[in-house]
Amino acid sequence: MSSVSLSSQLDKVQLQRYLALPQRGLCQVTYVWIDSTGEALRCKTRTLDCEPSSIEDIPEWDFAGTATYQSEGSNSDMYLIPVRMFQDPFTRDPNKLVLCEVLNFNREPTEQNTRFTCSKAMEAAQHFRPWFGMEQEYILQGMDRHPFSWPQGGFPGPQGPYNCGVGADRVFGRDIAMSHYKACMYAGVKIYGTNGESMPSQWEFQVGTCEGIEMPDHLWMARFLLHRVCEDFGVIANLDPKPVQGPWSGSGCHTNFSTEAMREEGGIKHIEDAIEKLKKRHAHHICCYDMHGGEDNKRRLTGHHVTASIDQFSAGTANRDASIRIPRCVGKDGRGYFEDRRPAANCDPYMVTEAIVRTCLLGETNSD
Image (cartoon, rainbow, N blue to C red; front, side, top):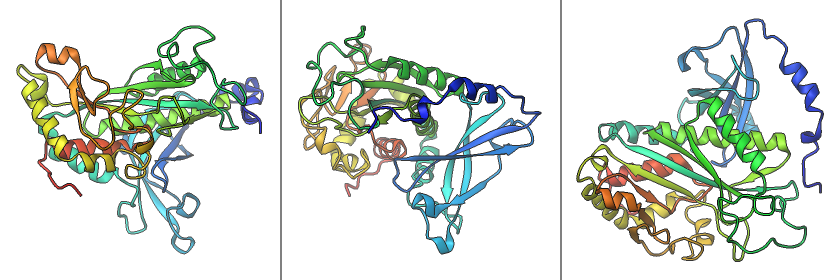
């Protein structure tokens, strides 16, 4: 199998000729949604008569749920409900990307539509002004599923020089990471930054600060843009929490959280209270923090490679080996935010942010 997809090697000059053609006042809108896996994204595009000025201007649409494992053929139509609009960096203005919720034939949320309950939790907690930032790690792979630029049949040098590295012997795939960064900026995704990670060909980007439901919406669109950029380069972005076995770091989605009270003078007390609540629901959060109820994170949260043990809750200032890290500046200032280091790279950000809000702000205490 080729390490790079054949479609990525087509003549892009020819593509640009067609993309540059005028649209005569029409607008392309690409609808993006999450399929039955709860992890993979799907999309399709339609023409509108004019450029939409807001999400309310974009009509509902439908799709064949049988093709995305979301319905049976005898009753296959599913509804796409636009919820957030972005600029399209691939076809550019006036064209749009729109993130959608999925409803079934009864116009009820599908099982994979975790945004529905997350938005309810965010509405209930909005007076707390919950702010989030999420740090998405991923590894680049070739079409042969081998890590990008790793020696065929072998391994690169051990971890150490790669994190935030510079140089051709330390950095693999910067073109992709930076293209994704610019695509997010153009689209209107609240991307905060990017950096090379501990394992060669592993990268991270951060999204935030976002308030409430805006956080998972923007992270899902950032993921869509990542996969689309990788498509153009002919490689794959893998969000598996432990993509390479052995002495290599896993991939997480560290989640930063604060409320208005935490950000004000004396906010450290509110941070400590929230951490105590998280400790009591550790098992519940582990179940919410990867796509398979904690099974994926078992391979990652081992207590090694800058992780805590999946079986034990821990917290500490400037401690990246803990479940919850209080940044050193927060400990010094006595206010700010904390970082939950348990979510896996393949987490559902709707489930992660909802769990944090329900535990820390809405007083839920059940552990099932």
